Length: 127
Image 1: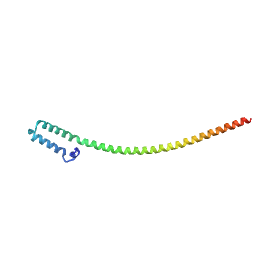
Image 2: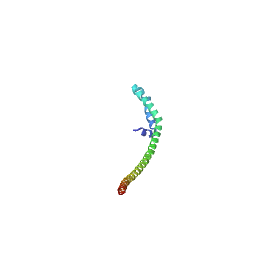
Image 3: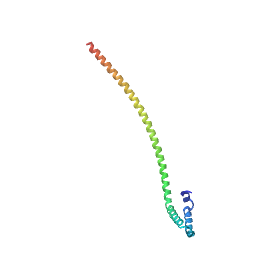
């Protein structure tokens, strides 16, 4: 049985503490010293656990709530990332087109410069 189950049973920790007290009270004389020491340790541990358990449960609830918030934020980030990746792919495709157009224009410019030089050379040759 888990600690959560014991805690949420009506008087769960109290029932266990009662059993330990009973063993220590009525049967303590018949128990070996090491068992008495172990029962005392259990008694103290149960007392500490019953005091601290509500805080632990609250911390767990807070952690679960925070986890839910982080899951939502994570999904939002994933959506934004996917959108950003799509935008990047679009910009890269557009950039690629511009580079291709630049190469074509460069080739045309070089061709026109070559024709111009031919024409200049032909004119110089006629003079």
